[in-house]
Length: 190
Image (cartoon, rainbow, N blue to C red; front, side, top):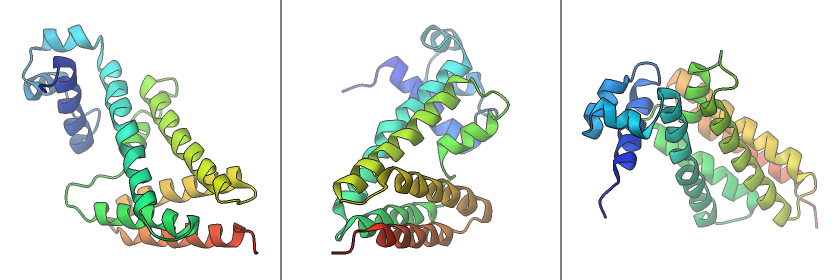
């Protein structure tokens, strides 16, 4: 099935925003990469801000689905399955084109614009991950699952930031070990 014009624009923007950053990727280049005129691009997106929001929204569900797959495919209990998310992210971070978390990178570029629609899309994505971790921890019978989910989220975002800063994916693995230890300590002893 052929992608719609809007989908082609978002796909081109996604590649450019992730590779170059929001500010560096101009609308002319995005239109060129999407194979459309600037007029067509602006027909589908009133502004670059709208396109940035669409870029992040297009990453939300695929990213969450990938985390869920890594979690479900991993053997073991909640702690081991959560560590697998970090282990898989470390593997991804070893790829030469890995640039870190697109949500966090966008938030950093737009830090002086807290009401920006992309900031809201990024916050919604992070809350979605946190909510899912809370559901999984609760299903595992872990008391204080909401606080634990927040701690895992903090470890994840910290690992994204430090792994990118140092260009060292082992920080992601270290964060996974910390998440594993936190969860093991929280598991009810039977």
